[in-house]
Image 1: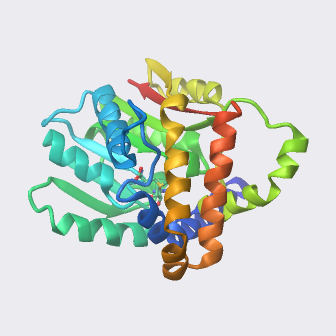
Image 2: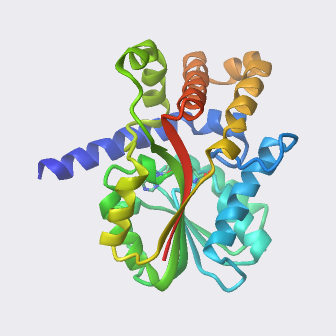
Image 3: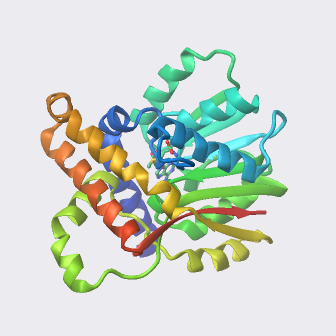
Length: 280
Ligand SMILES: C[S@@+](CC[C@H](N)C(=O)[O-])C[C@H]1O[C@@H](n2cnc3c(N)ncnc32)[C@H](O)[C@@H]1O
C-alpha cells in the first residue's frame, strides 16, 4: 500500500511539473520536447530532433502498416511526424492535459494524419492488449516512477514479436559528492522542471526488460550525438531571454536554463548517457 501511494505521489509531482513547464518547453524546443540526434554540427535542433524520431522509427521497423503507441506523447510532435512521414496509425498518450490540448490543436491542422491522442496515465491505461506493433517512449520512461510495471504493461499492449523503442538518459556513474553539492541549485531546478526522475542505470533496465518477457534487447549509446542539443538550447535561451521571461515565470525560465546546463555537465562528464534501447 505504501509503495502504491509513493508511485501515485511521484506521478502527481511529475504531472504538476510537466503542466507547469510545457508552454515554456515548447517555446524553447518547438514541437519536440526531447533531445536531438545530430548527424552533423551544422544540423538545426529541429532537424536533429526529427532525426532522433526517424532513428527510433527505423529501429522499430515502422511502416504504413505499423500500429504505433507513443507513450508520453508531449505536445504531439513525435506522433504527428510518424503518421505523416510513414503513413502509420499512431495513438499518443499523455497524462498532461496541458500537453494534450496543445497536441490536439496541432492535430486539427493535419486532418490527414492517422493520430489519436488520449489523456491516460501509462501505468493505468485501458488500451486493449496486443493492439500495437511498436511502442515508443521518448524521454518519458525516466519520469514514470515504476518502470518495471510500465514495461510489463507495454509487453501486454504490444503484440508478440512487436517492438519497444526507448530513448532516454540513464545514469552511468555517480557524480562525486563534492561536485553534486556544487550543483545543488541546478539539481533543485531539475526537480522543479521535470519532477522526480527514476534515474536508473541502463544495466538495471536490461533485466527488467527480460523480466517483462522482452526476449531480445539491444542498446545504442548516442550521448555524443545528442550532446549538441544542450548548446543549442542554452544559446537560444540566452538569445531570447527577455522575450521568454516576459511570456513565462522568470523563475521557471531560470530553472529551465539551469536544468540544461546541468544536463550538459552530466553528459559531458560521463555521469549519464543517452541511449536508444530496442526490445522485441
Ligand atoms: C519530457 S516529455 C517528452 C514528450 C515527448 N515524448 C517528446 O519527446 O516530445 C515527457 C512526457 O511524458 C509524459 N508522462 C510522464 N509520466 C506519464 C505517465 N505516467 N503517463 C503518461 N504520460 C506520462 C509527460 O506528460 C510528457 O508528455
